[in-house]
Image 1 (tube, rainbow, N blue to C red):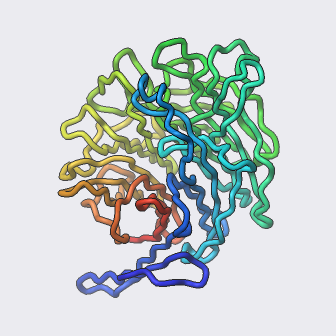
Image 2 (image 1 turned 180 degrees about the horizontal axis):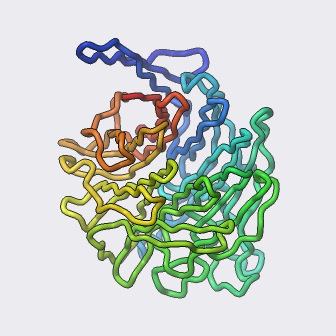
Length: 425
């Protein structure tokens, strides 16, 4: 079905799905970014009032850095903007995009270092994103962790605040201190923001992870501190969650000699005590380079689940693992979509007792589409992959959040647009 104009959305479409012996139900998708905007790398969160909150990046306008491309094969320079939109009708329509960064081009963002959003139980919207800055000590350009906040009733965003300390002020030797961040809220007004800090890199291929914590719903934060020493893959996306005890659970990829392993790391005492580390990968991935992949996690009571790209498994692709004892032990990983030519970029969420996973995959073409599976036993078994009913085009980089009614909201990059879909199997 072709999309049609909706008075409060750029484009909106409805698919009627029929199953034998069942009533038809509608599946709706919406284009969140306007047609004139090149958009990428969305993230989303659902508020306690049911609002759907989405952030994304605009087009990178920085010219390619020839020296970086020659040395590393890619350019690290980025100049883009951060946008936000909200839906109060379940994702059918969205507010006009609102630019959150004060200066055009002062966001350092790519598909792998994107903004992250969370909404607390009080309805406060929390966003962390990587920013461009100039180091006052060295005069060099640097990447910093920036945070912006809005209360749920006014939705008027504060001026962005820098969360990481200035490079060289604490004896560090590098100048990139705020990329690949993650954010999560806790049950007692905590806000945890963690990121990868490469300022301690001295020619090796490992970085550290830093954390700052708020205990007043983002009004103030502690000075940032190290939670993982120089063992973190320097450009693999972090993910996070908080359990009912207020512990921070981090999904990361750590470097162990020549291996890049997926691990789940648990911290207590507001991130200051490392409780446990568990390698959840099966076959160990030997790689001299950065795979730039996240380790997704989802938590529901004592049932924990993870999904990640495994490069050393046969076949390679998205794998899942589960724990039914709050992460003390983990199952062996299982392939989620072995029939795919390539599967990647998984996102996980519990919706009630059901666990959803959404990922991008290619079958017999070169175009990525989005697929989903559902588990009713905490991730021990999953349904067969289902292709989501979305418009034609290349669909990548899904983000996922759960509605109270058991449906899920998916946001993704569709060609050069950001789209969203509310779905229930």
